[in-house]
Length: 103
Image (cartoon, rainbow, N blue to C red; front, side):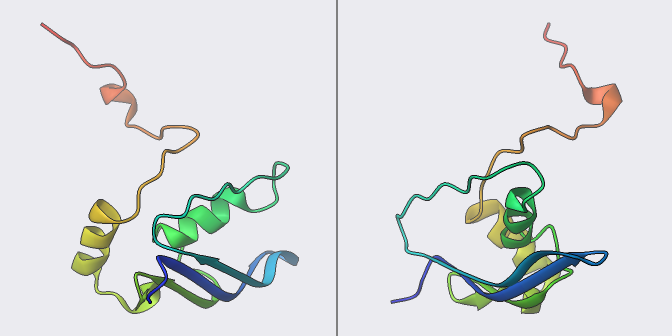
């Protein structure tokens, strides 16, 4: 059975500091997990990697069996839209569209 998400031997550095070194994670379809930890320990980084927002790392991430760094741009957009969903802690929106006017 194909895993929903597989993180295989991921290594990520910022400067000389390792955020992850050979990180492995496997999530089954329908499984819920929590990624918790102190500020600065890589929670957002791993979510950005899985969500196809961060491409600078060593190792492999698969979503529904597809290696995400090998997915074409259009297919990545579809995967992001239909398969991978999460809410950002801070919404990064364009300032001039910050508020919605309702008539």
